[in-house]
Length: 67
Image (cartoon, rainbow, N blue to C red; front, side, top):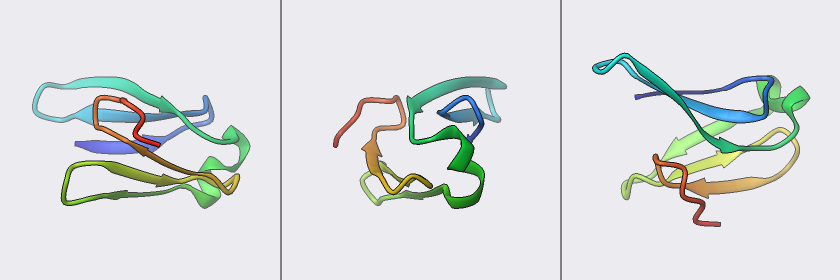
């Protein structure tokens, strides 16, 4: 899986095996995503996202918000 943030406020994912792309979760201030966006995938598969606006998000790869 390839994860990336764009200026539409969303974290996106591309599945290279299936060739599909989708939006996962709306995060932070779009104007700050490119410079301060960080993503870590935990051992449990949870995506931990630190956005450039100072917020921390946790979500499943399907987009279910954990906190």
